[in-house]
Length: 464
Ligand code: AMP
Ligand code: ZN
Image (cartoon, rainbow, N blue to C red; front, side, top):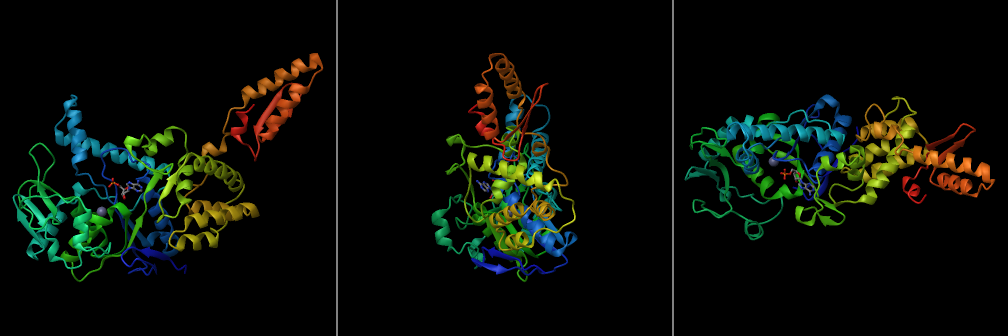
């Protein structure tokens, strides 16, 4: 069996992965807050953990993996969008508009992430469907002396958990210094965080022993992972911006509620995405959603390829240059894979690279080797394993990337003129330029036929 190694944030080391139960390998990944379209950065954990779940299924069997990724559908930002719609005259109660917003955002998310070749997890729990287990967990934490009620809020008492901060290896004092902790008069310690808070009458809220209210963000993941995966499971993932406070708080809650269990045994965190070397932000004007790119005609496979080119624990830079190169490489690979049948296994070196803490850039380098060796069945199987290809070549790669008909007309007309003037220099120059751009030129008495060849380079056409 392939040995999988993963970098465990908790151990700050690469470790051999040993599942609790090889017949049911369990993975939980923190999902999005569903208030708007996913930006390109949000797609990074989706692709990273999709590669991981594909690897786990390859090694342990497709049926022996349970992958859970939640939707946070209780949030002030969702409420704010609903409020704005109501103010703009939308029909329905605020609660209905909140629901509508979450539903449409979830549908967008699944469609956009699907375009990146990400398979849907086995379970996609919505926080609003797990309120009862959250309330039960909070009651249990209060009973065990780890949480307290104050002014309609329930807070987790950070001092009651001695290992608080162990994941990121920081002391509570360091964390206080570095974090924007909300200071509130009802907190015993400024680091104490909300498990439950009151909700106004018109916004979504649920009855609880502490009055009508809603859960805090962290308890959602503790309760949903427990309900679906149990009190000890294998891997917990998310972006490294979630390490503190979100994951520290999840650990504190889950370990205090189930002191004899492990909660998550391996913690994996992806680094952030940047754009052309800069943090993606609305103020810098370099903020875009996955949908923006797809609508501009950037294929999902190209986005995925660019992501896989950088190791998940390194900051990754989205650049136009990478996009262009990814598209050209994928076109070439698809043209080869298209000739093959589904009669091979993925290349063992590709599997081994991914099994080594998801070394996807190495996996791509191995696929380059296959391409040079023209081992098309293995190439095809390896592309499918990495999620870069489904059962068929994507339409965008099957069709020529450009419309060459204007150039064909131009060449035809230049030739007609040349036949009268007997000066063929303009025809020869045009034909040479087309060939230099990788275009296959066929001229006959009836006309001109142009087709992009294997070395086709659209950029060179601009010079013609
Ligand atoms: P959010 O909806 O903001 O909670 O984010 C959803 C997921 O996207 C989390 O796992 C974040 O860590 C991740 N994420 C947010 N921004 C970026 C970014 N720029 N690069 C990579 N991952 C990100
Ligand atoms: Zn979470």
